[in-house]
Length: 435
Ligand code: HAM
Image (tube, rainbow, N blue to C red; front, top):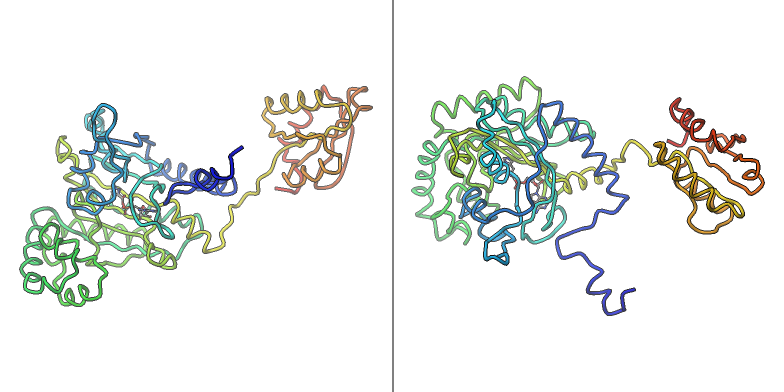
């Protein structure tokens, strides 16, 4: 037992992290089940990468001048003096794995998906935490704009299955390094004379990463930006054609979208298509998915020149969205059978529960020495389809009473036949009406 003093200190998750309790993990499991199905239908295979990586992977991959690398990484030195970082996102690790295992030597594209915790030192608020979970996909080794559309279609399909049809898809193209360079020069030239009116962050961005000025929400910066030309006016023919094709595919798949000229996203690895999916009711943290193409990242990480595209989406934000809409997982939690013991029947109950579980039936029993009435209450709370009542008299005759919870119908069944009898009831769908 913890002493009083310890409770305040120890009985609390670190700031920006949360437990997922059984009530919620049921919802997580439902969503993860849907995800695994959808990814499989779209031809993606699961990849699991380590929770931490060499710090340099993120510095090089995400970009030194990004908020994530500058301010948000959980970086530590291990006992051998290596700098390691808890992964703030999944794309750079997937690229590292693609290179390490020479997946570029296999038939392309390589289509991978993942789900797991990510870590960013951000100011926690609703929908923004320090440990959060992303599910996402990466397709490496293809320039086909159909894969860009696929990366939008996959989360949209998940949202559709969960009844979320009011999400907004925003897309943009930030071109290739060549055409983007022209736009960056234009931004610097146009904004430099007004630099002292920009917010502190944007003054720094003007030097290091001018494109990021476009998604600053500061009111003064916004007014300075009005009338700026769009990056789309600067795209080279190849980037422009690619963007047209992506839009064509989205139209074909009947996925509504809007073009947001100011969408640039917070990673240096993007080229051409970038996108975000938002659910506006979430307020400030409304992005429930984001992604884009990153044709230069594999090469930047020391590999061959391989085009790629991907997306990632926040699990907690999806849960908040579902909660906001009053969504309930479609199936109730149930068990097949509860075993209630009356009198000196303890060993028989334990043995029976174990045998039934081994036979593939979800079986629960009483762990205290409680009255039959209390045990029946537990069986109801657990939504048991059946309850086996083991009494001393019945046990002497090698029998037990089996009660169908929905109808109240009871019958005696020989203990030796119980497993087969129950399995048959469950197999034929006779689980009662409690599902
Ligand atoms: P991102 O936009 O940084 O992209 O994150 C994707 C999603 O993760 C966001 O839309 C949001 O739902 C969720 N998310 C991000 N930060 C937090 C946080 N602090 N708390 C809760 N949820 C959060 C990426 O990470 C890219 N790797 C996506 C990608 C994959 N691009 C290409 N491939």
